Image (cartoon, rainbow, N blue to C red; front, side):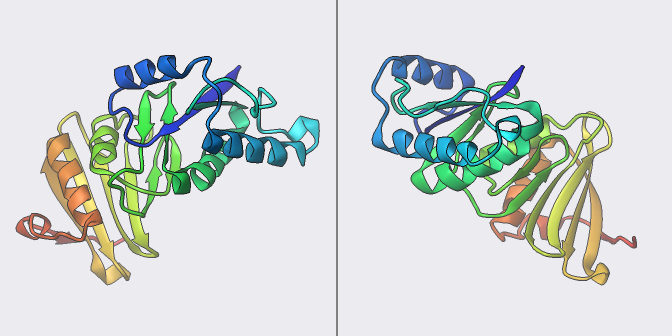
Length: 214
C-alpha cells in the first residue's frame, strides 16, 4: 500500500471537491513543462538510490499524461521525506500539494514562511489562514497540537484540552518570555495563531497571559 500526494497549480482549487474536479479535467493531457521538470527531478533522485531504498512506489513519473498535475505515490516509511522534497521542488514553482488521505490542500498562496510542526503529520514550511483554521479544527488525540515557529525559541502553540477548550502558549525567546492562556473555540484559536504569524498582536495583547515555568 502506498501513500499519495498530488501536485497541482496554486490557486486552481480551494475545496476538496474543486481539487477532484481539477484533477479530472487534467487526465489524459500532455504534462506541462513544470510538471515534466518536477517529475524528471524526482525520477533522477529516486534512481540514485538502491531499489530497496527508493522513495517512489510508481516510476517513472516523467512522461505521464496528467496535464498540470502530478500524482506521487510513496511507501509509508517515506512519507515525511517525500513531502519535504515536494515542498522543495514544487513550492518555488507555485504548486500546491494535495493529500487525499487527510483531505488537506496545502497551497502556498498567501502563505507566511514559518515552520509548522503538526503533532500528527510532521513539518510544513509555511502557514496560511486556511491551514491554521483547518489544522486547529481537526486537532484530535493522540497529538492534538500544532507549533508555529518563527525562529529558535520564538513560537506559538496550542493544545486541545476538550472539544471547545484550548491552551494557547507563546514563547518570545528565553524561558522568562513563555506565556500561556486559555481560549474557547477553534476559530478564535486559529485566528490568534494567524495573527501571531503575521506579527499582529492586537488581539493577542487583549488576552490575559500567565507566565509559564517549564
